[in-house]
Length: 395
Picture 1 (cartoon, rainbow, N blue to C red):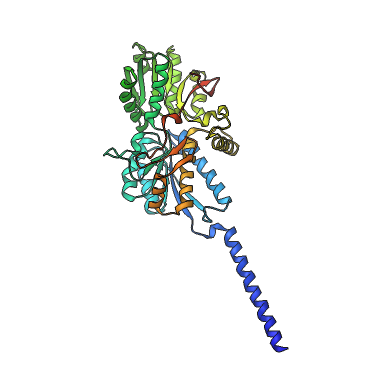
Picture 2: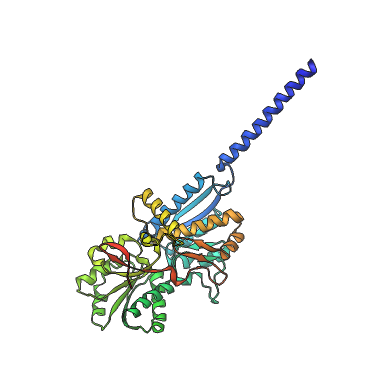
């Protein structure tokens, strides 16, 4: 009897230990926060003159972080974003990037919002050997001095060279040959000006005026008055700052009725709202996020675009913008890499360089060792402002 009693006690204790072990295993599955966090850095111009870029980018990645962690993290590991406000300033961006790399020890960085800020930290991420996915558009971001791709640098916005080609393609189809340039002196504006000047002869365009303005300029009537005196058929304005809306207003004030083309930096409805009726008829190349409703149901991007647009607008009660879309693409690329290779920086870089068929808001990305942007000119549509809203422009 005594032996049976002891055997029963042992059985009960054994079952208790087994049940306890199973409970602990279940808890581990249900509580990913107890596992190592995957830390990703983010550099956005949340405040300052480029806040219309950085704020929706910040909002977007926070929304994704919450979604990922609610669903159990990345292979059980919680995602931890460390977000720095660059204020759109190069020096602040450099300091923030160094902090993310040295102190926070992130496995990858997304952003910055601006081209100039991105180019300021390219040498830093190259030296630190940490993957960077920029949310800025200048093609020069991914190009090394030797003409090859910067090994550790990628970007999600469409190329500024492709945007310039898309504008010239539309102009040529509509008989426009003599053009005026009006560009900002920021990194994005300066790089855009270079692309426009380089590609204009290729498309049979003659630049009859070439004016610039600073990021803090609040009136462009002087530059536009000079342009008005030239025999031009259209104006191209290229910047990301609020001046995009000011140019529209100044043109109307001066009675300039020429077609106004803007860069893909115009892809936030706030610019239209600030410009009011003066923005009507503005033409610009842009991704399909702003006109997702017009896409056929079988379009490869429609499902992703519609989901992001609904999620963002429901959450933040404001219109989605292409800038938030650039951050959306950048973070999901990093998340997919982390799912496959974990937080190893070099493996993340290699994964990104070989990633093909990633459907994002900016297009269907096909990265290669010779193309760290992965998009073609066909990622753009030509849009216009109609009745205060964005619409696809009929050819």
